[in-house]
Image 1 (cartoon, rainbow, N blue to C red):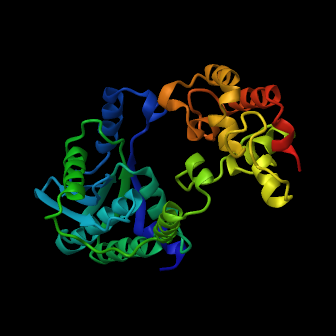
Image 2 (spheres, helix red, strand yellow):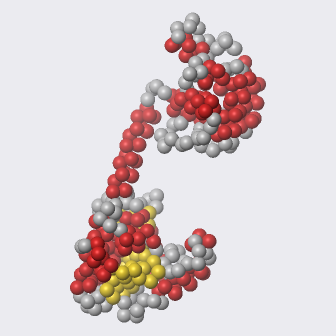
Length: 341
């Protein structure tokens, strides 16, 4: 279908007008706005409520036709997103109406997904859900050819509208009930990208878990994730990154790389001097290390490399931990060996 013909096939129907953000509005006000919108529907039009649901257990789609007590629901593949579920519900409702709507009657599809409404009414061939969108328009054309009309409207979710609540309940049940019809759907471009990233990241994570090398780095950050940007002064940034990577020109490194005679800690003479030894183990610096733990508010089992060097906001902020570690390394005269380029 030519893009300039789409407006004549599916029109924007009744939409609830909220006085502000839905999160800031009471359920009663949302219900009133939805009721006002639904009053715009002609008594001769068939109303279909659609909904999609995605939970940890799965994804489901459903529609409900109150005038004929028709309910449809299906479980979608696990990789399907909630937007795809919403669009599938709209498509299935439109295709069912194309078969059962009396000639000349109008169809009003009511969704609680504003994103789905935008995809159907204002999307184009570049949309990641274009194939499902085109299926919806094909069903709408069949209704037009029988003398009917198709409108797509929006109301807020979970505000007590019986038809919407029924569709929501059916979609939620389909998402978790494995005995429900499993309907294969073509993945959208976005879902393909997300699934590819998930699978690739999972394979990398498995390899990272089983590697023999890099265990210091693994202890600091065992789960692969996107790099977080931490805005620090250049000297602090260099120190922080070296601490997290386990790279420092301490005695053990100098013995391996510079061939110095001994890699033993010059403070305790009891173990090789690496970052783990300096930060966690050296008995010579126990008192100063205790002051470090007090400053960053870590006690007992919390005193680990992970909690000390994580980029996440632990008990204390990253910047506070950077300052505390910098002061600790200065007090034991090891900061220059960590920050040396």
